[in-house]
Length: 308
Image (cartoon, rainbow, N blue to C red; front, side, top):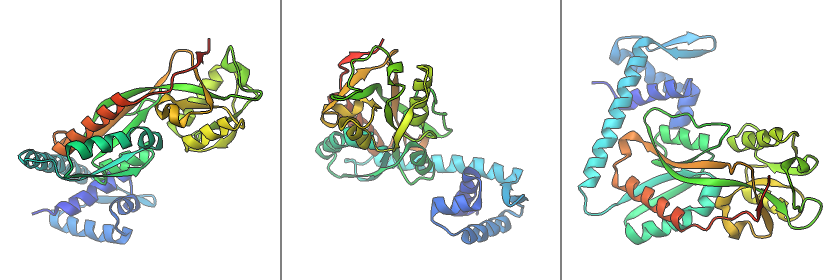
């Protein structure tokens, strides 16, 4: 009988594109991955990898095994979900990954709801940017993640993953209350010479922010590049930058800055994502309901005015 752990190793080589990526994903050494795949080749009696330059690629036979492995893993998770549904209480450990603003704004109320309704369920939250969270979800390190999708970079739909919309989060301009960039403004173009705080250009947030400025006719002067939204807000509050911010942060985190609406009312789409086999697992259902309740209770920051 074929070994499921070795089949999963082969799947990770396919998903990550290399032995090294599979080793990182599953906490193996590359040599251990190679040795286990050689054992799998002996078990199957066929070649599974072929050299390509300095790397390897899967043979057609290996790709067929990966397809079966995906089905097997999904069926096993569906079986676990069915067994858990038969229990009287929701219990166990649920591993969740989310980016910083979601952790700040949504996680506390969601944890309160879960503690109230499902005290036997333990939720472990890890802060991860979206791509890293998806990697962990597909590698089965996380059971549920929160993703974000921006207008200029639609999120690709991933096979074997079930998304549920959580929130359409308005995107605003944050201005200091004093100084040369305090406003009011008529258009975004008036900030062509302003210093900006932005996410890195290779992120969805950073790509969207730069695209908005370019559509307004200028290239932003990025004074500080950071993934930390609270640092961006603090730079605005102290008068050292302007920034685009999500309304999700709420009045508490945005105190001391001016929130300005943008033309066209852009928003980012937040979703909860789980592997398809775990969609009906009681812990997943409970966690999704708690996040939805937290969003319903949330007080978002309203813009003081909107640019033309």
